[in-house]
Image 1 (cartoon, rainbow, N blue to C red):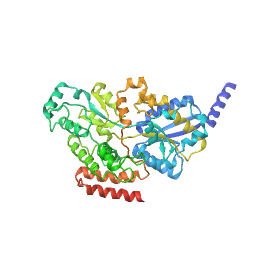
Image 2 (cartoon, rainbow, N blue to C red):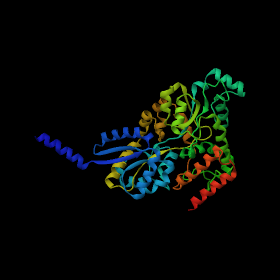
Image 3 (spheres, helix red, strand yellow):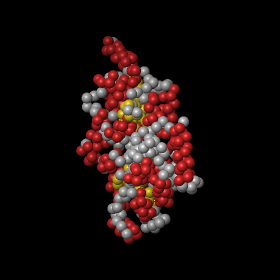
Image 4 (cartoon, rainbow, N blue to C red):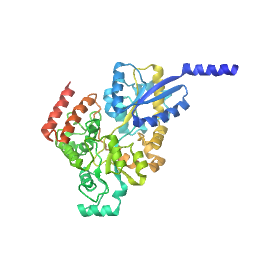
Length: 436
C-alpha cells in the first residue's frame, strides 16, 4: 500500500512540476528535432517537448499571426533566415537571457564555435542575439558522377564542343553541358534533359534568381557599381539599400535563366519536390538543390552516382535558427531556453548532421574527422558558406517577394519583355513599399 501511494505521489508531483513546451518547425528540420527532443527529455524529465512540423507556407503566417496577437500558443520555433526581420519583434533577446541565467549555459557551449557569418545572419538582428543557428541550409550543385566520368560520354562531349567535359564553375559552362545532356539537342544523350530547374511563381523563384544574379552582383564590376551587400538587405540591394537588380547584372541573370530553360523539364511549373524526382529518376544530369535531398539521391541512385560541388557562381543561404516566443510565461521561457541550447550544442550539431543530414552550423562539426569521412558534402559546404549570397531579411521582405516573383515569372514566360524598363518598373514598386 505504501509503495502504491509513493508511486501515485511521484506521478502527481511530476505532473505538478513538469513544464510542457511546443516547438514549431519546418518539415525538413522535424526528424532531427524530434530525435533531439527525445534525447533532451531523457536528461530533463521535468520538461516535455512537443515538436510540431508545419509546411513553410503555413509556418510563417502562423508565426506572424501568433506573435502579433501575443497569444503565446507555442513556445519556440525554427524560422527561415529571410523572415528574421519580420519575426524579430516577438523573439526573446537571448543575449540578455544568457546574462540573467548564466547557470543554464553549459561551459562548452561556445558561441564562437558557430560559423561567424551564420551566427550573424540567422541569429542576430540589429545587434541583438535573437536566435541560435540550427539548420545551416544552403544550395549545392548535384550532378551524375557516373555520367561525367564515363569515357565514351567524355569523348563525345569533346568532339562536339572542342573541350573536356569538366565540372562547371560558371553558368556559361552549365549551359553547354546542359545542352549536351538534352536529347532534343543530342540524340545520344543518356538523359532526357540536362538540368532540373525550379522557377515557379512562388518564393522559390525569389531565391533561385540569386543563384544567377549573385555571380554578377559580386563580380568586381558588380561590386564597383553596387557596393558590398550587407546581411540585413542582401544581394538584391545596393550598399546604400536601393534595388540593385535593375541593372546590367540583373538583366544578365534573367538572360542566363532563360538560356537554361530549354534544357530543363517544365522549369516554370516545377518546384522543390519535382526537381528532386527528376534527378532521382535519371531524367536529368544536373540539379541545383538544398543540402537535405542528398540522402534521397544517395539512397535512390547510389553514392557512386551522386556528385556534389559548390554552385557555379554563387549559392544562396537558406539557414534556420531556433528562437523563443517573447509572449509566454517565464517558466516556459526557461524550459524553451534549455531545449534550444541543447539542440544547438556541439554534440547536437554533429549528430543531427550524421543522422539526418541537417547541415551543420558549427566550425567544430565541419572540422570533425568522423564528419569529414562520413559525408562528401563537407568540402562543398566549406566553400559555399563563405561565398553564398543572401536574401533580404528586412520586415518588408514578404511584400517585395510577392511582387517580384510575379514580374520575374512573366519575364521568363515571355508575358513581359526582358528589358531595363521592366526592371525599373519593379524597382519603383520596391521603393514605394520601402518608402512606406
